[in-house]
Every structure is written in structure tokens, then in C-alpha cells.
Length: 139
Image 1 (cartoon, rainbow, N blue to C red):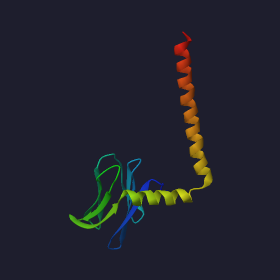
Image 2 (tube, rainbow, N blue to C red; image 1 turned 60 degrees about the vertical axis):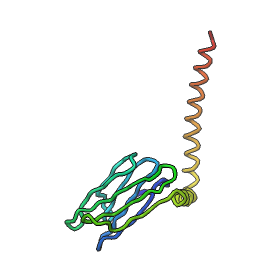
Image 3 (spheres, rainbow, N blue to C red; image 1 turned 90 degrees about the vertical axis):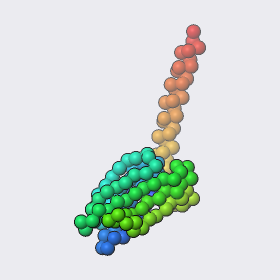
Image 4 (cartoon, rainbow, N blue to C red; image 1 turned 30 degrees about the vertical axis):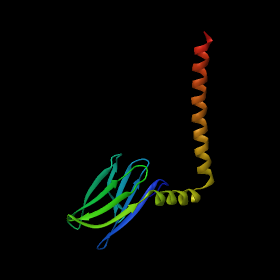
């Protein structure tokens, strides 16, 4: 599984099971794994979402809440049989520290690829604006 630099990673334990939550605060993609098996996936830009699944014939939920998009915190809660078992909180400084650490580990070619893509997009936009301006003032 590929964890991107814009994702939070939280772990919870329930008996012999390990629950892993990968939540991207940029793309809105949320994935819930139980023992490395994907059990729920959503893409949401709302302030809260709920992932429902079963663990040992008990209803389990992962609740993701965002208090503020720009400051956080991002709160991830694990509920089992209607009872809050554990929670994890990601505030903005913690998210930025994780992003910085992940970007430092990113290979140079991936960093250069982003500059290349943005350069091409900027060139295309510049050419379109230039063409439109020249056509408009050509008279």
C-alpha cells in the first residue's frame, strides 16, 4: 500500500485485530483496514464521515471529524458495539511535520516530476492567455 505525503495514518487495536486508518486531508480519501484488509473506503469533503464494518460479529465504526479545515484538529475515533474504544487527534502542526518528513524521504525524480508538470501547465495557460490577448487586440 502506498501512503502519500498528504495522509494521516492512525492505528487502533481490538483484541487480536489491528485497525489502520489512512485519511488524506487534501483528496478527501479515507481508507479503513482491518488486519491489512480493506473494509471501507470513501472520498468525502464533509466535516465528518462514518465507516461501518464488523469485527468478530460486533458492529464497529470509524468516525472521522474535522473541526476546522485550516487549523484542525482532525479527530479519528474507533467505536465498537456503540462504545468509544480509542481516538486519535491530528492537529495542523503534527500534519505539517509528517508532510515535511515524508517529503524529505521522497526521491529527487518525484520532486522534479512535479515541477515539470506544473511548468507544462503554466506554459499552456500562458499560451492560451497570450493567444486570447493577441486575438482580442488584433482588431
